[in-house]
Length: 73
Image 1 (tube, rainbow, N blue to C red):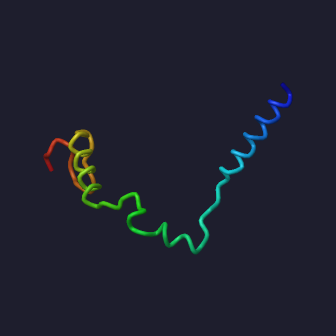
Image 2 (cartoon, one colour):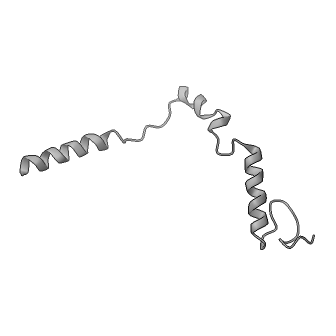
């Protein structure tokens, strides 16, 4: 039983050791700076999502628009 528990802990330690956080090296940052790696890569999709959000949220005025969500300016 003790041997089995020791092997389980050893296996866990080996697996957990592979999960260490390694920050990107300077030569790898070019890959992360590509446009398709950005959260807002598709500008049309982001604009559409914002439009749908402001249409659903009647209490807010939207993004950069004066007035309330009722449509009156």
